[in-house]
Length: 225
Ligand code: SF4
Ligand code: SF4
Figure 1 (cartoon, rainbow, N blue to C red):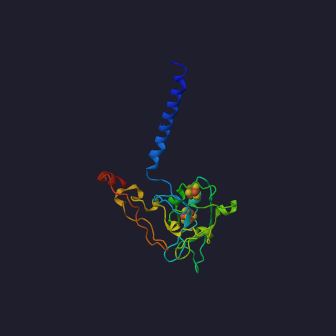
Figure 2: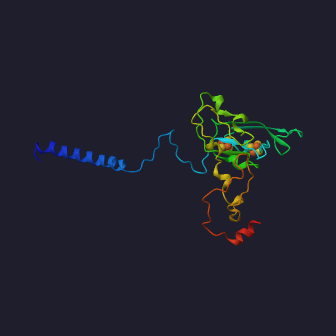
Figure 3: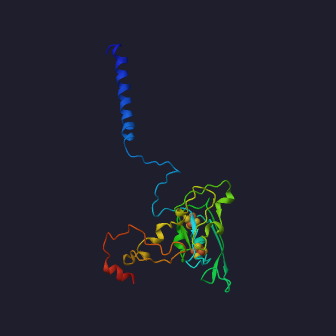
């Protein structure tokens, strides 16, 4: 190869590589966009999205929490603090003997695993679709009963009442696990609500999209009895 040909071939290589690189860019330009103009446009959340917690009430306004501390016991991050108290028979807060007198979650420690929801015997604690929980100091990240407990009519409390972006519907959307089909893992219970109604939302329907893909084995069902 002569010395005059060398720079010319280098130039062709550079132009060829340039076009190869641009091909990726051009191809992406014509594909549907996966990003949205957050926060103006929010992407739809999966039905089992694990966002901020709420403490629920029964439709009559009674608190569902009975202060049993099972949620605190199961929490792997040890970020729940509950203190139960005996109900005043003349003015009970919950239908049981006790209620959650103090309830706190340190959301800086929470890993949003949902085990507290799973452990709760009364569906008192559920997780919502709200993930916007920015705070400017650590104390504000400790949600107390004031922020967690819904109003007697079921309206959830937003941390920032003046925030125009507050989406209370996201705080009403309970995560899907409690509405998942087959409580106790049995297909016979598929689509059968195994939970109590809540103030503001009534009886939450079973989780969508849990159709039977495999017919239950009758022998397995008998063995479960
Ligand atoms: S979601 Fe998990 S880490 Fe967070 S409070 Fe519940 S049990 Fe604890
Ligand atoms: S939220 Fe549920 S598990 Fe936790 S203390 Fe209340 S009733 Fe018990």
